[in-house]
Amino acid sequence: MTERSIEIPVALQQIIAPEDAYAYRVIPYDKVNEVFYFLTDNQDLESLQNELQVILNLNVSLKLHASDQIDKLLSLHYRISDQKDAEAISYSQDFLDKILMTAKAIGSSDVHFEPYEEQCRVRYRLDGKLKEQFFIPIDEYPIIVNKIKNSASLDISQNRLPQDGRITMSIGTNEFDIRVSTLRTLHGESIVLRILSKDTSTINLSDLGFTKNELSTYKEAIKNPNGIVLISGPTGSGKTTTLYATLKLLNESTTKILTIEDPIEYTLEGINQVQLREDIGLDFPSAMRTFLRQDPDVIMVGEIRDVKTANMAIRAALTGHLVLSTIHTNSAWATISRLIDMGVPPFLIASTLNISVAQRLVRKLCNSCKEKALISKELFPKNFTVPKDLEYHYTPQGCQNCHHTGYKGRMALYEIIPITKPLQNAIKAEELEIDAYLKEAQIPQLKDHASRLIQEGITSIEEVFSLLVN
Image: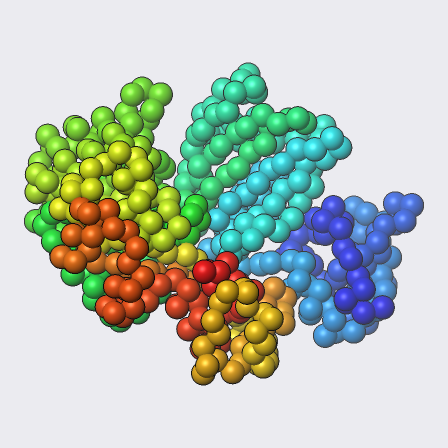
């Protein structure tokens, strides 16, 4: 039996906590007639079996397995944090606390509770990908739902309409917030918990993924006392983190900064942050109107969703304020088309927009296990022109350091277009084909950065494939 042939169901994985699995070096792999079968490399089978039966209160049977394969199975199926705060996790607490604290400790961004006919699946999002972590019997799931709702101050009697709330938790000295969203589905309420860190000490513009030239261009744009800075990209592309890093740089005792957010993901000392409350009429446009009477220097709007918000942002920029915001478009230049489609006059866009930024998050290859391979044109999209100097690429293999995913950590890719005089004239004339200009001005696009990261062995072709499509 090899580790590749062992398929361990999530329901079986969760009978033992990750810390105990590592401490006893055991892997559950089967269950027959109430007997749970474990693999281990511990030679003292009898003693270990007796101890596990007491700890787990289960009928246990053990089988010896190779140490290197036990290492691989442990890293593949159980994640434990190497952070000091993780020591504060107590698995004697109730199951919900265990799920939330484990998610925070291992760096998960979201926890998904998804009810089906016979059981509820719990998945963690790690480095942008979902991974099954637990299964809850469907008859016990309502208890978890009520605990979440109570913690988030939601109405436990309301299970037909969506609800949104917030939970504050602590692990040691690290306090964090959890955004709660509920949605009625066929077999019960689906719940998604977004983990929001209050710690901004590690957020810096220089660490996000900007090249040296891009960082210089971006900093120059945000030094303007007025105008609009727009960051575009899909959900989960890191736009908010870039905005907070920007606010952190602008946050000085001589500057007043106001934000309207949904939700407030980080707490920044010295910045006036407002939570969006559409249920009481506090939406982006109404907040912006009030902000203009608060004498701010910098305004951050969580997202430009409609023409009202866009017009208020332009009004603020025209009256001497620097406005930062996000917008959902596929590229930096597509932001212009999106604003025009909303109904914003092109001449106002041209006179107020300082810079347009597009970004994506990509997973980085694990340096411990990535392997070099020859380039083949078949690996790329059909219309992509493979650079002549691109001879090799790197592929993910998987090892203990990356939990056998082949990737470890993520970084942002940026496409930055400063709105120069020629581009202002192009926007006013609605001449939105600027490929020749970008090439002449040597402004790299997302696909150019993706190609560079492949060449440098930082990421794989598979990870950035969608960015290479013309």
